[in-house]
Amino acid sequence: MFEPWQWPLLFLTGMAAGFVDAIAGGGGLITLPVILSFGGDPQQALGTNKLQATFGSASAAWHYGRAGAVNLHDCVRGCMLTFVGAGVGTLGVQQVGPHVLKVAIPLLLLAVAIFTLLRPQLGERDLHPRMARFKFDFLFGLLLGFYDGFFGPGTGTFWTMAFVLMLGFNLTRATAHTKVMNFASNLCSLLLFAAIGKVDHAAGVAMGAGQLLGARFGSKMVLARGTRFIRPVFITVVLALTLKLLYDVYLKR
Image 1: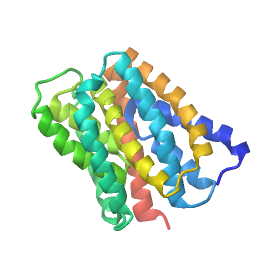
Image 2: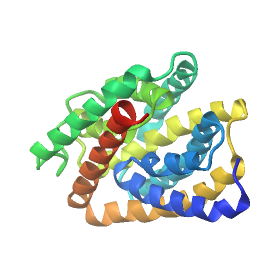
Image 3: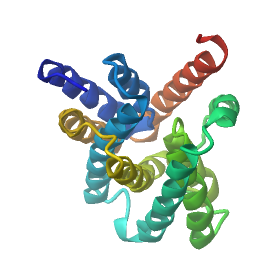
Image 4: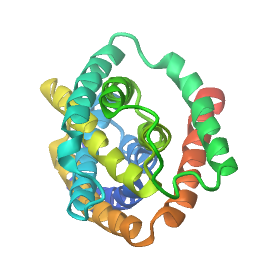
């Protein structure tokens, strides 16, 4: 699918996406259009994208864990449920297609952006949780895992808001935990795409190497600057993702 001369471009694309994704999610806005622009099978493009995204989410989760922003042991149950949900979603989309979600998700993302803009104190500090962790892992692990496997765009946004609103996490902790859950769903989808031969391994590794570096830099920025740094990036990414999805649904021919 890809020529060797394209690999440096893929590396740089992965690095930029890894940086953005480690801060606020939405790295797929950068990577998938680039992969698709080189042509080839759309399913292989999705599988290759999952490979490089797995590198980025693993790198970010590792750095957040080392810095103490997330307790990886506490995420085991949530990761397992997210993995299962992503598997069901990845298999389901091959049978149904994400047509309804393409219309509904941009509206949900827009609501998230407006809500965040109207609540300037949102996520500045830890608050009392509104839901027990077991119920949270079960509900959001299966639901958002399924969504990531079935459609994908905005998964990081929904995870971050769930951690903030349901478990009372500040934005830094929520972002860190989001990357752990992203890793679980990315890995599951990657394994399923690989099983049917829809992954370009060389291109995915080239982008993945860039993701490793970008995610490292992005996670360090979050840990150093905290919520006030995350908030504007988060809102910008959510709005950009919303506009991109609205364009794909209503304007693109």
